[in-house]
Length: 382
Image (cartoon, rainbow, N blue to C red; front, side):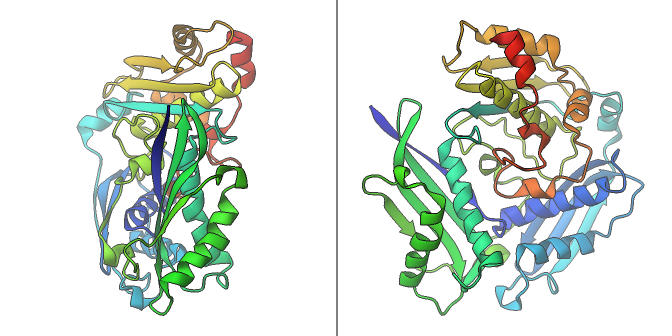
């Protein structure tokens, strides 16, 4: 029996994503000067205002206001009529050092907090990602690319946009696209009819292969009729409020911790990257068609308290989930320091993660997306 599954994404101009990018831009700016820094940077934004706060321990000096304005400018908020722009928005900074109680555990190589993290991969796509979230990202990324690189196609676009994609499934196999929702901020002069026509021609036709658009696909473009007021003027933004967009679109579990603004001693981020890396390499090695990994940590303790493997009954050659778990525990260093060293996480690479998903970005500089463990896994488990 078939069923429907939906995932959503938001663009770099969405107020929550503005905050994620500012938080990670601050992290990158500090890491460029001090890779050993401890950073937990949060951001809030609303009409004409950005607040940056958190716990940062470093000897490096970073001009927070300059980082904020540069990030907002690069996103595309440069016009005062948006009621939020890089030159005129107010910027406030409230930062203090990391708690000494937390630092005591972290400096010895322990986890920066307790928590559970998940990693996931499947061979459903060449990016080893679920189709709904993958195509939801592609839609809003295409809108941003048009706005920045081909503005003549849709000259009325503004930075804020959202997407939603529903696929029809049989079992774990996606059959076709069922529903597409695209909401894009726009100038006042353009008509709804023009936006819909352009979305169909320049966005959907560019993103989806024809074989996925069989049957009658339902399309909703700016369903309220207008989306002129957007960005931080239309809605306030917060760092870490789009965690399902950041990961697997709800197809796989999420432990609850956000990523942006956190240095990799925070296992919310580093362990989620490490479990994605493992899951992707296990699937690419042919051990299973699909793999979900859960890992748990205690604050100040280096080794995980648990590792759980679920291949959803998709393993090959008689390999059991417990065999995979045993191999990981014996051969892969999943301590925070081990993850940081293996994935080279103390580098200024994080601003790029903060929009369009942390996973499934082939060709990126994200070490957790590399298929560099396949040979060893095949030797051990196939």
